[in-house]
Amino acid sequence: MVFPNPKNLLRSGMTGTVRVLNSSSQAIVIPYKAVSEQLGEYFVYVPGDSSKVSQRRVSLGTAIGTNIIVKNGLKGGEKIVVEGIQNLREGSVITTADPAAAASAAPKK
Image (tube, rainbow, N blue to C red; front, side):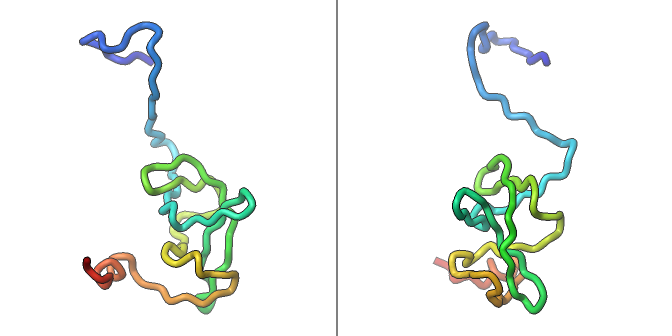
């Protein structure tokens, strides 16, 4: 790969970090705060029948700001619990809200 360097800012022997956008595959990106860690494994809570949650193991990829890529364990379009995961257990019953509605209902500081 060739990079233009018209001002000679890059010189032989220099090191740097290159981040490459991978547009060849569809990645699942979730908020990192939705992930819980237990004994070196990562989990998210997925609502199921009767709004009961189940814990699902996921494999994580690269962090992107406050989000993270999920390599395995989730399918596109699946819903996950983002708020209040520290209070959940397997089989807990939750109430759901649209993220836009939840943001507008949140108390303003």
